[in-house]
Amino acid sequence: MTEVPARPRGISLERECPFAPPAQLAQLREHRPLSPMTYPDGHEGWLVTSYELAKAVLGDLRFSNRNDLRHYPIALPRAEGKRSGTPPGMFSRMDPPDHTRYRRLLAPYFNVRRMRELEPRITEVVGQLLDRVAEQGPPVDLVEAYALPMPSHVICELLGVPYEDHERFQQDSATLFDLRAEVGTSSRAWGSLYDRLRRLVLSKRTTPSDDLLSYLARCDLTDDEVTFMGITLLVAGHETTANMLALGVFALLEHPDQLDRMLADPTLAEHAVEELMRHQTIIHVGPIRAALEDVELAGEMIRAGQVVTVSLPAANRDPHRFPAPDTLDISSAAAQGQLGFGFGIHQCVGQQLARLEMRIAYTELFRRFPGLRLAGAAQDIRMRDAMSIYGVHSLPLTWAVEGG
Image (cartoon, rainbow, N blue to C red; front, side):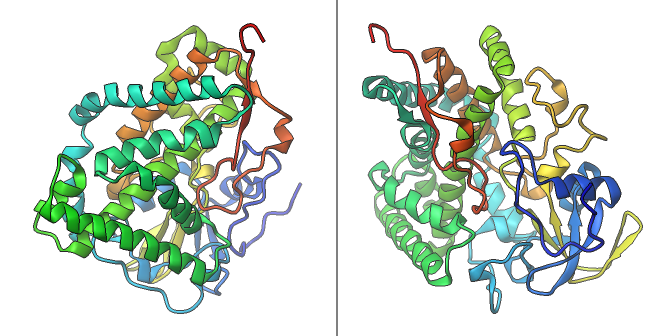
C-alpha cells in the first residue's frame, strides 16, 4: 500500500481510473481528513478530504473566498507573483456583504418558478440538437455536437448574449480553465471576454430586452459590475454543465446496468443526476478558502491567513456519509446532499438550472438513441486531467442506423 504522506505537497491529479479520484485522497481521508499541506508556492496550509469537514469549512464565514487571499494547491503558471484582487461584480470570489448583494439580484432568474418556465425551451433546444446529431449520423463527438452547445444555447439566451459568438466565448473559457495556460494566454482570454461582454452591456443600457443582462443593466450597478457578473455566469453556465453531461454519459455507457435501470424507469433521471454529480465530481482542485481568523477544526488550529483546500471528489466518496461510495447507483437516495454544487453561501447559483438541463439532456439522448455506444475503446478517451473542471475532451459515439 502506498505510504500516506505526512504533509502532501499540493494535491495529486493523477488517476488510475478515469471514474475514480486519485487514490491518495482516499488514503488521506481515512488517516487524516484534515491534513497539513505544503502548497506549491511554499504556503503552509491544509487539505480537507472528508464530507463532514468539507461542509464545516464551506459553511463557515470565517473562511474567505477572496482572490487576494488564495494559494493554489497545484502549480499554475499564472499563479506566480502577486495575487490580484477580485474584479467588481465577480461575486463568486467575494465575501459578504458584497457577495450577498450580488447574489440577491440574481435570485429571481434562478428560482424554481423560473426553472419551470425554462423547461419547455430547454427541451426544444435539446430536441433541435439531437435532430442535427441524427442528420449527421454516426460517429459523432458528443462534446462538440451536444454536451457543449446545449448549455451554451441556454445560458446565452438567459443572459441575452448572441449565440453566434459562442465559439469565441467557449474558446476563451477553455483557456481560463486550462491549468497549464501561461499568464499571457490567460490574460488575452480574460481581455477578449471582458471586451465582448462590456460592449454588450453598453448596448443593453440603450436597447434593453427581456434578458438577464438587460435586467442587471437597469439595476444600480456600474458597467464593470454588470460585465463581470455576466462573465461569471456565462463561463460557469456552460463549462460545468457541458463537462458533467459528457462525463455522465461516458460513465453510464461504462456502467450499462445503471443505464438500463434509467431507461427502464425514467423517474430515476433526477436520482441519476445527483448520483452522477456525486460519483463523478468535476470540481477537482478546490474549493479554496482562507482563514480570516484562527479557527479550531477537528482538533487542529488553522491560523489566520492559512489556506484550506476542500477536495470535493474525496468528500463525495466519504464512506461515513455515502454507503458503498465507490459504486455508481442511480437509484440510491443517499446522493441527496452531494457536494458537487458546493455548500454554504457560495453554493452554485445556477444549480437548479444545471439539474434541469442534465435531466432533460440525459433522458432525451438515450431515448432518441437507445443503442448508443462508444465509437472506440474506453481507454482511448482523453480526460481533462489538466483542466480545473474535470471531464472528457471529446466523446466519440456511434449507434445503429435503420436501414444501414
